[in-house]
Length: 90
Image (cartoon, rainbow, N blue to C red; front, top):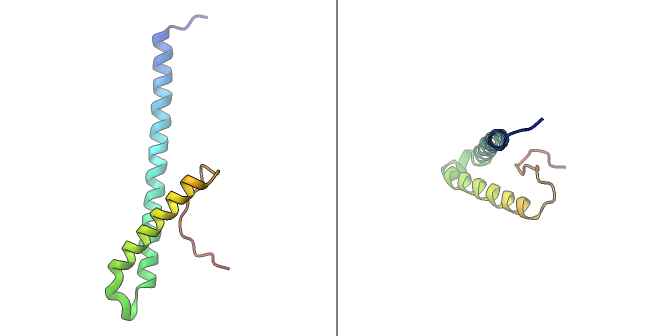
């Protein structure tokens, strides 16, 4: 069975586009999750008498999440790892 090169290119392009859209959607979901974690931790930490420093806390959590993400992306061998802050301290 012969397959034309135009049909093969169209099949490869549609698979490539589908894979790219899947990766973009997954990245968007992960970034929204990370933003939600950062905002919630800043809101939990900067309450009471230090509530007026909440904007600095939000900036600090976003910066620390970006640094942690960059370090994990550059140094980890686990490509699908998602570095987000968690509440599991032991």
